[in-house]
Amino acid sequence: MNEAVPEWSPAGIDPAVPTTARVYDAILGGRDNFKADREAADVFTRRVPQAREAARLNRAALIRGVRYMVRWAGIDQILDIGCGLPTEQNTHEAAQEINPGARVVYVDNDPMVLSHGRALLVDNRTTTVVTADMRDPAGILANPEVRANLDFDRPIGLMLVGMIMHIAGDESPDEIIGALMEPLASGSHLFLTAWPDTGDPAQHALSQASLETLGTGWARPVERIRGHFLGMPLVPPGLEYVPRWYPEEPDRKVPAFDDFEPYERTYMAGIAVKP
Image (cartoon, rainbow, N blue to C red; front, side, top):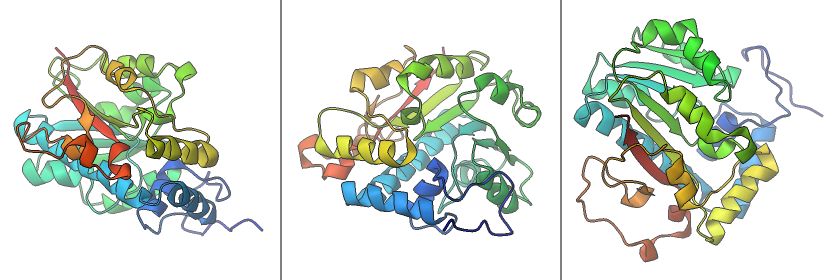
């Protein structure tokens, strides 16, 4: 028997079909998910016992990247695509902790994200949420709320955290990224995290769990991930495994790759600057 959709849920939700945002929420131990999402999360934890730690690793990278962009690069407006459901600390909180006037536009294709995000942000006048799909970059860029809240004549921080692995190769991920970056002003930043494929079993297991439950989620060779930055210069320490990635402290002493736990090899992060 299918799970009933609660009265508070927005229109367009099928609780029998897991979504990336809700499965991620379930892995993190959140409550904004359905039985199908929790069952999918169980697949992740069976294949990668430390899947929750891996998800938290990605979230830690998100916060570090936002802090770098706002504090050191002076970015005061962010377009966060594939933001997911609200969790412990969110992009706007990390940004506005440093610059209270920073503007953030969240984008996600799950209507539950819109519903929960707008409830959370009811008193926040510098942050908004819109429903759109990364696969439609023109639609995102033309969205009236995006245009009303971001000044495209000044640098923008474009965030694709935990997203690009869900775009298949035949969907031309680099073309999507290029279309999103093209109208952004010089000095804009591209911040993304991705699943590397170096032959490590944990990397393969994470990708297989995602493909099995969501139908998307491809780990890619490191050089292929590097290509997502479209040749733009990377800020130090470059494209790195998250436990070694501290853009605010690029000279920080970090653990050697051989000392990693398996889950610590599943995410890489990087930030590039548009010349």
